[in-house]
Amino acid sequence: SSSSSSSFDGEWVTYRFGDDDDDGEDNTKKKADETKKRTQQQQHPTTTTTQKPKKETTTTTTTPKKKKKKKETPPNNTNEEEEKTKKKKSVCIVGGCGRIGSLLTAKIVRDSERYDKVRVLTRDARSERAEKMRKEYAAETATSRGGERLTIGECDVVNDTAEKVRESVKGYDEVIACFGAQRISKPFDWITNAENADETHPKSVNFLGVRKLAFAAKESGCERFVRVTGMSVGYSAFDFIAVLLNNVLSMTIKFQLLGELAIRDACVANDETKNRMSYTIVRPGNLTDQEGIDANDENSTNNSNSDGSTTTKTVKKNNENVVVLTHGTNHIDASKISREDVASLIYVALQNREATENVTLSISGANKATSSTRSAFRWDPARGAYWETQAVDDANVQVLSKWSEVDVNKFQPDEKDDLKEKAHQFWAWSFLFASFGGVYLFVRAVFSLVCFLAVRVTSSGVGVA
Image 1: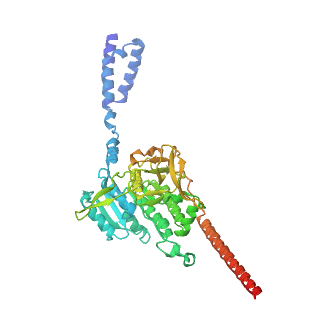
Image 2: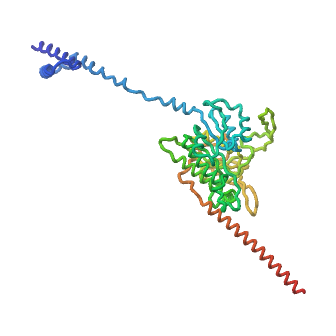
Image 3: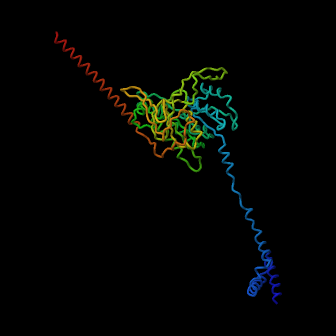
C-alpha cells in the first residue's frame, strides 16, 4: 500500500501542478490532492523534498515572469552634455559699432572655435562705422546656422518697443550692452524736465534703455548679459568724483547705478518656465585709446585697409603700464585704462562664464607696478597732479602685465544686498548750492572791497581839496 500510495501521490502531485498551470481541473481533485499530501508528509516527511516534479513545475511557474525585458534603460545624457559643451555660442553686441564694441567684435568674430553667430546692433545700420565693419570682416562672414557669421542690424533701446527689442536679441546665448549716454548738463535742465523729455538723457539710455534690453534678453532665452558702466558707480554718493560727474554729465552715475540694479532684477526674476540668465558687470576707469597691455613693443604696426592698401600706424609703447582688477565692492582708483583692455576683460569673462557668473568687475590702469606695490594717479589742490605708490591687496586685487596672467578663480560673486540706490541727487544739489553760495559770497566780498576802496579814494580826494 505504501508503494501504491507513493505512485498515486506522485501521479497526483504531477497532475496537480500541471492543473495549476493550465487551470483545467475542478476543485474536488485539488481538495483530494491536498488531503493526500498532508497524509504523505505525516508518513514520509522527506518524500516531498526529493520529488522531481516539484522542481520541474517550479521552473515552469517562474519562467513566464520576464521582468528584465520590461525594464527601460535610462537615457544616456553623457553625449547630450558633451554636445552642449561643444556647441558653439551666439552673441549679440548692442553698441557693437562703438569704440569698445568694435574692439570686442573683432575678438569674437575671429574666434570661430567658440562662436558661429555674431550680431552687431546699432542705431543706424547704414552708418559709416557699420559699412566699414562690413568691409573689414567680409572674409569672416562664413555661413553658420543658415546665415552669415557676422550680421549688422538696427536697434534703438530708447525708442523701440519692448517687443521689437526682444525680437532683435532673440536666439542669442549672450547679449553684451556696451553703449551709454554722454550728455553735458544744461543750466535749465531742472526747468525743462530734461530727464523725461530728452531721449539722449542718461535716464533714457543708461537706465530705462538698459532695463528694457535686460528684460528682453531674459524673456528671449539669453544665458548671459554683460554690461559696461563706470567705476564711479561703486563710489559713495558724496565722493567728489561721483558728485562732479553727476553735475557735469546729467546725473549719469545715478542712472548707471539704476541700470545695474535693473539688470540684477532681470536676472533674479527667474522661474521654472524660462531659462536662467546671469550677468557680468564691467566698470572701467577713465577710458583712453591707448594700446592694451598685450600690444607689441614695436613702435609701428601695419594695418591692411579694405581696398587692399596697407598703412603704417604709430603706437605708443605700453610695456610700463599694467591693468588693475578687482571685484564686487572692493575699491580701486579710477585711473586711465585702455578701451582695448576693457574689451579683453569682457572677452575673458565670456570665456570663463562659470567663474564670472553674477560678478561685478572693476578695471583701471597703473604705472610701474611691482609684485607688492603699484603707482596710482592722484590730484590735490595744493600739490596738483602726482603719482602715489600704494600697496596691493593680493587677495582682492590683481595687477596684470599681460592678460595671460589673470586668475579668474579670484573673482567672487556679488552679494545679494551689496548694491543699493544711493543719495546721488541730494549730494549733487548740495554741491551746486554750496558752489553757488561760495560764488555769491566771493562776488559780495569783491564788490564790498571795491566799494570800500572807492570810498577811501573819494574821501582822500575830498580831504586834499
